[in-house]
Length: 189
Image 1: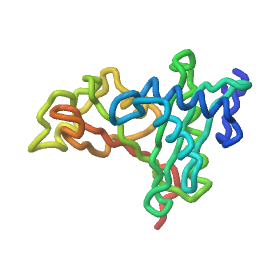
Image 2 (image 1 turned 120 degrees about the vertical axis):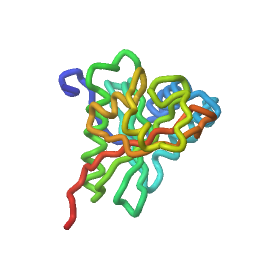
Image 3 (image 1 turned 45 degrees about the horizontal axis):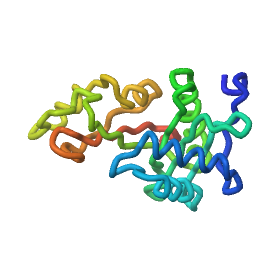
């Protein structure tokens, strides 16, 4: 599907100056808050950091145009990788490109012996049924009943991630950080 669109998924390279800058603009635009990338300098720093050791940085490009970007950070001695970030330009959303990027990251993690990919996705604007609630003292009951309304959690559930936890009030009262994970490697006896 990606190839028929003329899109290639490949490693982001330090020599990809135009792509690096496009990735920084995407981060700054879609994650602008104080806990994100409030200016281009912080976004550029994150893009360059994604090229470091223990990191995967994959881009979906068509020619010299960035369509999407996904990254992975090696954690837990390589057994688990944090998915960070995933950004797709609006014109390519809901067309399978995000799903293709996640599948590509899963393959790269498996190649490196990884077993799990995990992520955190904040709800700061009411995108899930967890928003605005006092989740204590029965946090796990709320997690089991959680649903995505208009939130990335819905996408991640569709591509096989499971809801594995939450930090209530991580972003202020009623604004949780939601944790998701997916097994991508082999089970060991």
